[in-house]
Length: 294
Ligand code: GLU
Image 1: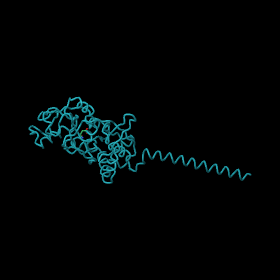
Image 2: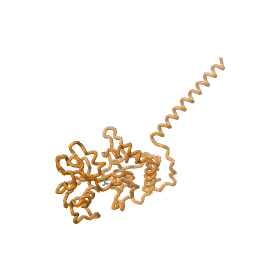
Image 3: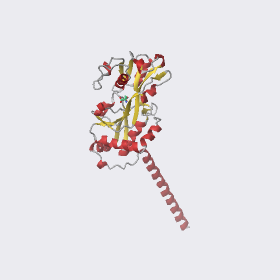
Image 4: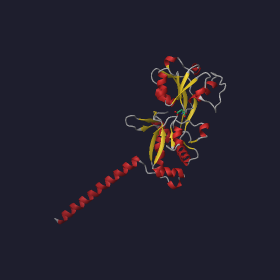
């Protein structure tokens, strides 16, 4: 009788150990799935990156309306897209959380310069001029610029843009790219064009530009006839390419997107090493496919 009782107690104890063991296991898995264990040696990181690790969160500027790149679901508030995933992957590498801030072409550099964000992953084109002020990683995606019009406008090519007003985002490469493409195609002479001093607000040869702070406003201006055309990278324009609207024939000005960081910061090197590695090992190609950006 005594022996039976002891056996029952032993069995119950074994069961308790198994149950507790399973629970611990499932806790670990949950932690693992939300934040993978980082293998980085924090002591070997540049000082500014060590500070970010101490803070425990990487602050990333992303777009919130560019589906496939940076998009925030208005109901769940969740961010998705290639650039959102790359931001999370950088934070995972450092073993810290990621926090997204919605930026526009007009606000992304101010927020980076002020230190509100650590890096920008927001369809930010690498240009020689911009490289003087910020660091850019190796490009992770290449897009082209084109022009979106209402079908009723009968505009189908760069030539048809003569005498028209084009909506562009302030702080973007779009207006300059369009003028350069028109000069290259001999649609305009380009007299007075200077790549370093070009100002969309003052350009009047062939086309005029109206600058806006965000893309939804340009799309509305196009519908309302306040502008005749909408010019920017195709990845952004595709969101506004609705029924009754078409792209013109030409695509021009390759736009290489890079992760942007403060000039000379340690984070620049860390991020560039990661982007190079993820380009080589297929991580970026997989994210491009996952977000249907091929
Ligand atoms: N990619 C272009 C640029 O960096 C278009 C603007 C934008 O990203 O919103 O100027």
